[in-house]
Image (cartoon, rainbow, N blue to C red; front, side, top):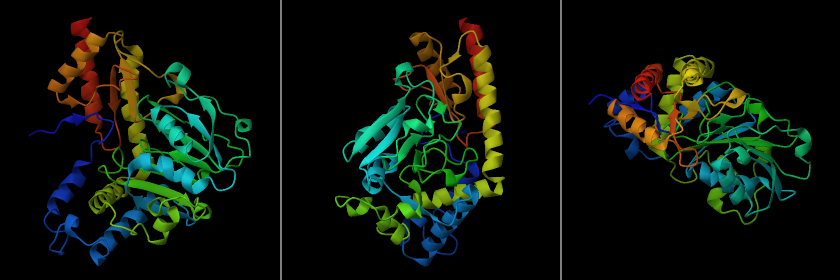
Length: 360
């Protein structure tokens, strides 16, 4: 069967080259005589897989030596609890910037363990922009500042690193990690669910500065302590081995194809094609304008719910899948992560032009 263009916000498309390697290795990884899914996570075969995955990720993001890399379970949602449980060490307080549904969930979870100050919010306009942030918003009586770098549902992203007054900066990068160049040193902790730009669901990446490890609250469950996982090299318990293997293949694919800088250039070109059409269309309108536009998630609407439904239905018949927008925004959303091909964006725009002409 011919593959479709999957615009889903996650789980998302994987590079075909990666899927072909995984297909080849399904019954036997190398000369091991067994699938990665059958391997002991403590065996030499899997050790080579996880070590290479970490090495390639460090290369791709230029991760400094004083940062630990963790391969964990639980998705970004578990990090909503792990971050405060491990970092609310001194003041039992943190500043959060509310820019979408996932930021709201992170705020709600952190509020269970300490005081949360919502320093700024864009909820007044359905999270269609990133609020202006000033250093004085982030008072020193807090343990960290939390942002969501890219907002999957609403199609916004931080284009500038906020001045957080010297506090540790934490970011949820689930839907933008590896999509454009950034400096890891600007952050104290980064976390990301894998199912958008890295690999299959079930794996979460955490990049944490060493000085923040080992300060967890007494009530922190063992499995939610960063110190436990850093001390065991992500092998305290059985990790999501197959998801780590696929992530490693994706990292290798990125390294061989020019790294993050080359991927950013491609992502900007893909996004520009769709934004350019949306900015000039009489029927379709983007929900985000200006510098806060995401490169990864592009919501758009017609303003007519029935027309939106018709578009989504007819697009699916053309192999353009996963375009339904989140209920809080409505309309459509095109998620065009790293592995999404440029031809898919061109096909979408071509169909949009045809649909607009036929339904004007």
